[in-house]
Length: 150
Image (cartoon, rainbow, N blue to C red; front, side):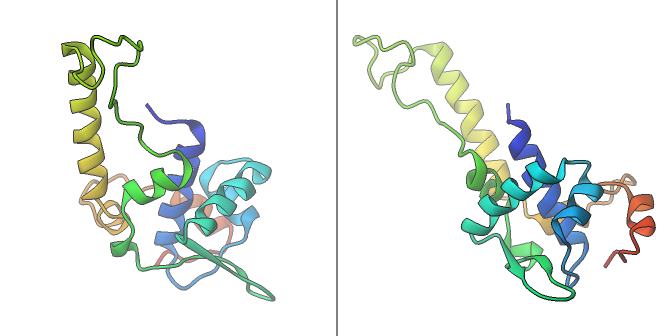
């Protein structure tokens, strides 16, 4: 359903949400999220343009969330990379259907609407505070890089 770039962006934002107040470099984010550094750089540019993250320069510089994790939804991250494409008109271009979608495309759009709603209602903080025993990303890599989990 989502591109690899969207997956990488979500990993990066979750990782930054785990490290409140600690600016992470492109390389640190790439290592922590298992994303090639050159690809991570492009993802970070898109997230920065969308106002989800911000960069700090100089010693100790890197990337931080621009807003608290409880103010950033999964939907915003997805939209920064590849907005959800709802089905508004017949994908086959059938003039007889127009905006009156057939049952198949209507159902597909209904599913997309439900996913969009769930993503809008779920913040990064909710993911990080979930009671699931599996924490996002790999904590052992955090320790090796000398990064403290917040």
